[in-house]
Amino acid sequence: MLQLKDLPDKAILEKFASRYPEVDINAVMQFLHLLGVASELSVGLDKFLSRYDLLQGRWWVLILLMREDTFMSSHSKLAEQAGVSRATMTGLLDGLAREGLIKRIVDEKDKRQTQIKLTKKGQQKLDEVMPDYYQRLGQLMSVIDKEQGQVLMDVLAKLKRNLTIFD
Image (tube, rainbow, N blue to C red; front, side, top):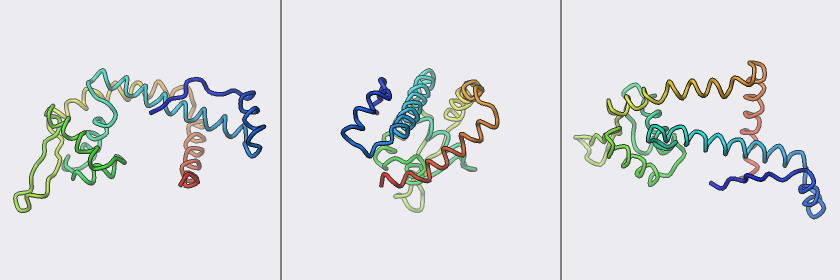
């Protein structure tokens, strides 16, 4: 993912506005700052997870499996929940299986059907990561109070509902 480290200031955006008069400079600045923070959050999360020999994709798969009552799910359901292609999910699952964090269970009646199961080792990995994750997440979010947190959630929900403008 490309990350713009040098966000344009108002003067640069005004220069763009002279060429593209429909630009709303404040909206662009707000969007770029939001995108920048989201990118930095993603990089920070990957940096944190790398201490545990994980990256977000593999970590999310483990969490998705842990959410299931049976700690099992299908390949296609995991891909859908994670928002990735089935091919990408195959790669994630292959790596997790090599490390013994998940196992594939072939349906005895229909050999084409396979369930993905979180192993004891996979659960132990999550048990190692999650307390540290939740502590750091609490520290990160401690800079905003409860009311600000609700406003943030409301604003993000509005933006999410309006994402269809990019379709």
